[in-house]
Amino acid sequence: MSADSKVRQKSGAGLYLGMLWAVFLLIGGVSFGAIALFEPFLSDAASGLPLTGYFMVIFVMALLAAGILSSMAGDQTPSRLSRLLQKAVMRMMMPLAFFLGRVLGISKDALWLSFVKSNNQQVLSRRFRLKPEQLLVLLPQCLQGKDCDRRLTNDIGNCQLCGKCDIAALVKLFAEYGLSASVVPGGTLARSLVETRSPKAIIAIACERELSSGIVDTYPIPVISVVNERPNGPCIETRVSINAVDRAIRRSLGLGSRPDVQGCGIEHKDERKQTPGLQWGS
Ligand code: SF4
Image 1: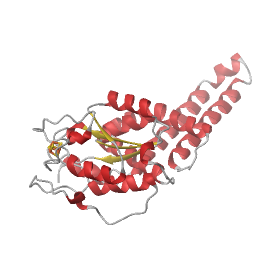
Image 2: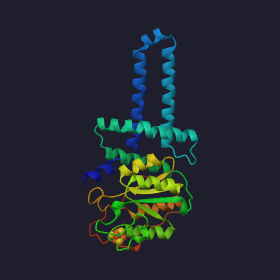
Image 3: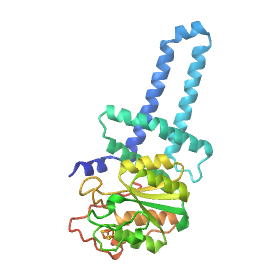
């Protein structure tokens, strides 16, 4: 089993959330410890200063706890405060969680994947009933066959449906739902597309690293992530589970589930066995 597959098997949503709580406890412990350590000096400066310090730490800890809890809950319409706290958790505690993970020897890939799964759990606990034009579908350039010269960035319809990569099946799938999708070579173009289109939700296919930064950058727009498969290594002819993409689309449009679509009638011409797609939301 490849290291990539091992990471995917081991990383549940709990890993990232566990790291957040560990950071929370560390911040609380260090803050209380610092006040206790310097209490004599603080008391000399002003008799009520240590107590004020303890109350301030408790207040900040309560806000952080609320932020983590709201990151775990799937509010249908999160309040402004809840969105603010979740953003603070992503911007401030997430880097600390990754730093702590590095200290503890946990790979970044495992934490990114865990974050993506945690985000999927939260997003998918909401009920969506979007119109196709309210949905933005983003595909990575690396899905395209490496020898294919079709320009897909502006128009995925330029694909000739030769079936040498998963784009062909995706084009058919998107046509079925009346969706337009964009192939984006990098995060900058993805972000500018999000600004231009102002979607109500995003379905993004990418590696866990790109997905994580996209989720943080586009928050509070809900992002449903489908992690690609890398049978040829990172960024080269990656694959995606068409069934996982189909399920993501149907959830976004408020449609019921249906049997697996089996590549939309397009057989992939690569003889290598396709690895099963990541079950989003798991
Ligand atoms: S299916 Fe064929 S034509 Fe379409 S993007 Fe892939 S390799 Fe190119």
